[in-house]
Amino acid sequence: MSKQYIMKNGTAVEVSEEVYEILKKSDRRIKYVEHDLKETRYIINQEKATVKEIPAREDSLDRLTALGFDFADNSTDLWESVIDKIMLEQALEKLSDEERYLITQLFYFERTERELANELGQTQQNINKAKQKILCKLYEILKKHKFF
Image 1 (cartoon, rainbow, N blue to C red):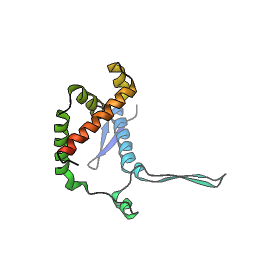
Image 2 (spheres, rainbow, N blue to C red):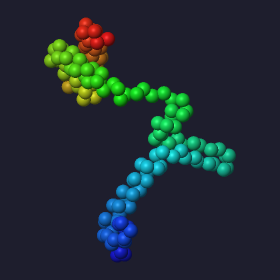
Image 3 (cartoon, helix red, strand yellow):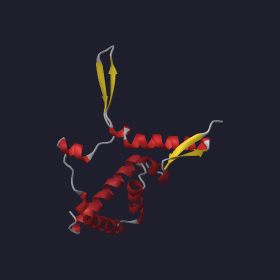
Image 4 (tube, rainbow, N blue to C red):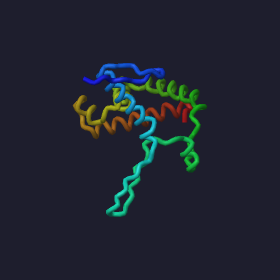
C-alpha cells in the first residue's frame, strides 16, 4: 500500500487511502460545480466537419443581462409574498375539509390526480373537475377580499 499525502497549510500530511480517495472525489466535485457546469463545451467531428455546442448548464446573471434578458427584482416582493401566503391560508380555511385535503395534496404535496383518484376510489376526471371547481371557489373568495 503506497502512502498518500495531501497539502495542508503548505505542509504535506500523510493520510489513509480512504481519506485520500474521499478528498480526491470531493475536489473533483468542487471543480465540476465551480467550473464544468459554467463552461460551454464543443464536440468537433473532423470527418463530418461539424461542431456541436453543448451549452453551459449554469449561467451568470451579468452575462444574461448583457445578452438582453430582463429579470424582475424579487428582493422588494418579500412583504407582498408574506401577505399573499396569509391571504391564501385564510382562503383555504374557508374550504370544506374534503376540498382543503384535495388542494393541499395536489399543490402542497405534489401528488397527481391519478394518485388521489386511486386513494379516494374516484376517476382522475372526477378529481380534475373537483380541483377546477375548488380553484374557482378559491378565486372567488380571494376576489371578494379584493386580493385580485
